[in-house]
Length: 251
Image 1 (cartoon, one colour):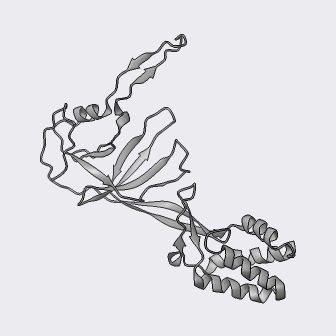
Image 2: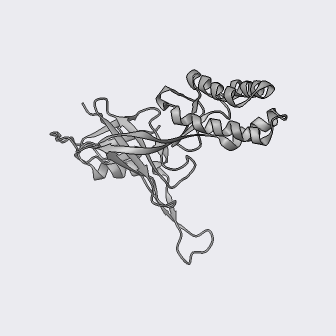
Image 3: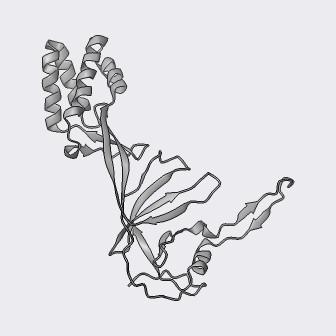
């Protein structure tokens, strides 16, 4: 089982996992195949030794607080999430400098939020889907519809939109459903640009895809961290035996 441990005295962070005791293998520059040196490791016991006499507490990771500047599958990146000891909340920075280095964690006092930089529509996906479903529609008319769609984000308030449940492959790209007011605005714009069967085809297309398909809005965000100074508190020393496996929580 995983545990996020904080040293209250110096704010060092350890993410304790079942892999903490996995050994490392060191290969020399002139080693023959199969020749290596085994280095035994125990990150948790090392942490206890380094912080002996300090007060330790376990932090709880706040659900759905993870965010990163790079895609989820990227192994070398800086990520942030929030954690709490029950009375205070912290930002935890998670990072590694290169693929060969272990993950490191840093506690930050303060908070972070995502700032929306732009909202866009999926223009290429819209055009491809529209021409496939409406073969009688000319490419010129399809381009006209896309231009109307591209104008819609200018009048959208993202706070009124609902996120789609599926996660994007990038933490800073969030998809939103079109709300009823925005849908009505789009239909009104199309009614002035299309006539007869063309409008009926466009109307059907909008109603089919506005909730969870090509007519979703994609919002691009950036991470903004509001860091504050560490509060001054008197910390009563607490001796913890190095051999102990128990995580002491702050009283």
